[in-house]
Amino acid sequence: MSLTGCRIPRRWLVLAVAFGGVFLELGTMKSFGLFINDMTRDLQTTTAILGLAFGLSNGFSSILAIANIPLMKIFSARQLIIVGAVVASLGLMFSALSNSGEHFVWTMGIAGIGLSIVVFPAHTTATLDYFPDNFEKAVSVILTGGGLGMMLLPLLVEQLHEEYGWRGAMVILGALNLNYIVVGALMKPVKLQNQEGSRTTRATESKTAQEGYLEVTQVIGHDSNAVKESVNLQIPKVETSECNTLSGRRLLQAENEIKIVSDMDTVEHVLANELVYPRKSSIDQSPKEEGTTKSFPQEISRSATRFSVCSSIKNLFDVRLFAENPSFMFPFFFEFLFGITYTCWIIYVIPNAVAKGYTTAEGAFLATAGGAANIVGRLMIGFISSRDFVPVEMLSCILSLTAATAFFCNSFASSFWSLVVLAFMNGFASGAKIVMGSLLAKKSLPLEIVSNGMCYQFFSLGVGNPVGGALMGLLYDRTETFILAFKVAALVELISAVLILFPILIRWCNSKSR
Image (cartoon, rainbow, N blue to C red; front, side):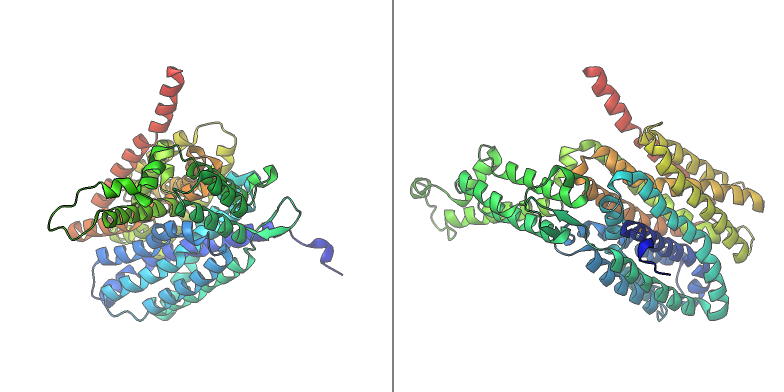
């Protein structure tokens, strides 16, 4: 029987492989907690060093996500994911050869660098390009893979650990992560239909837009009509039907940027015009100081160069979105605080059980319970938020309070089943908050720059990960218990719960002033 009539649409395949990629990423990270005791003994290092290494492996994948803003203007998501998969896998495999804590930190850092160009391109391409009509639900489904990975993969890795030791298990984990290559292979660039009916890939049009933008910014001071002609030649026009795709939004953003740059009446560009092309009379009439070896035109040239470099960096990484959308600062810092507590829960839930007198197998069961709740949280929150019953900021506040309660109650929980309940609570809250990072970016930013906002959310989460890993490990080394560490995590969650309510307060004040 022929299967040609039963072909699955590509976007569903993309959804499936993106789900699998997140499964591997977080399942691998969750499994690291199984190795901590053996690693501290074999590598003769501290828990804080190992916490830093594990935090870097996950943190770099998010911190360096900011590099994807310029990279995705040059390379396709497919190219980035495949290269990153190879680098990440090699980093995990080489970690098995470590003979000290410092070597282990370096190898895990390499793995994190590879993941940095895997996780973000896969996430944004699968959601914004393939599911622009069901963004919230697609984010929930894809990120549910992380919860499933945290629940199932540690059970497999525990068996590998008993059979081959932590070094052999790390090699096998590195081999498993080569499956990211399959994820990248299916990330075919979405094609756009232009006015003449020809089709070009997103990577090509995005690169053309960026080149046109850079060319215009370099000719500031020329006749504005010439600038506009250059814009018309370089930037493809965006159809209304294309604005629902990430590609169309990026081209629309480039057109808007060019309109701003070509406006020669603004003070900034007039000053730039004077710096780059100074009037001859102003140079001739300027007095020269005795003993001065640097001429006035040279100083102007250097000032213009500094101005150009700063402008290029700002445009390259789209830093202006913070100035144009100041309310985005609250979700940005909320994500940083979540990164601190997220690492605390995901890495130290098994060692916390061992510190309370339970076996690693029982600790793995706690991780499984938390992973199951993580799946429920990731899957439910997208569907709930898509109904607009409650503002996403209020949902985030409730989730932070739930996590704070679980962290605080750990200090006096002693029975195994009470730890299971707390793991379930924290797992649910953490899973839902992972999805909320993307939803908060979409809520705070215009549609055409949501992808860049998501990138900064990844970055903020990544900065918090190694901070949380090192801080909680340091507190454990000082006290030999996780009680104080989890209380600190509860305090951080309380602060984030208050912080994320400010956008709602600002919107309420603005509505009253009108």
